[in-house]
Image (cartoon, rainbow, N blue to C red; front, side, top):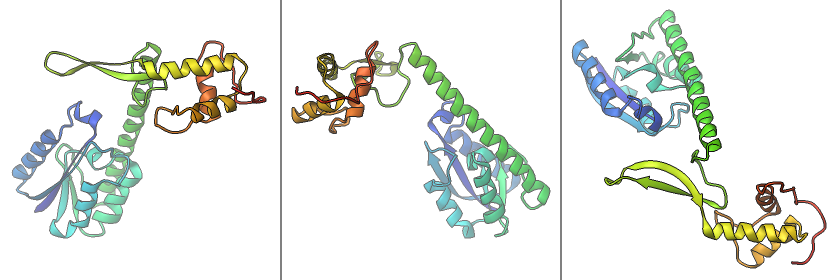
Length: 244
């Protein structure tokens, strides 16, 4: 039987043993043992299985006429969304008379029972994705509370610092003060302490060429957040503007 292979990894999953080469070797071994011909391999590297908007997946589904079925390492490589998995199996593969194989699982979408089993697997995959998201969020929160770098764009006044070893490998990721931005923050706080409103401070910053971290003009909301980050800082987004 002619099969098209599909390999998918996200950055997090690749580090946990779902590497593309490992998946591909398992797929090739499955085809060899079961007498199938692997006619094509499609890849999506570093992409989440929570969406069907993946170039490799779409390319494979658009070329189903060239194969009798598809082969993945496991159902979760196809998708981590329950509904998307059923769309692929029940509305794409099965109506076209195509089969689904998994190198590490027994699946058979030719029967109602088989498609139900795939649906159950898909539900578990989706649950695992939710757990991964929660663990990632909780881990970042804990790291941030401990003063470490929790990912994402640093707040104004901070910048990223990657600590490297002798071989150039990253050994630690942390945030450090950005002197230029810290000076702007001090300026904002001085004006606030003198009684200026966030509106007036933002106007002053923009008039004097100061920009936000992304290079855009300041708004009163952003100024108010800077002030609120100071211990005991109050929301100064309201009030009567005074000259600077």
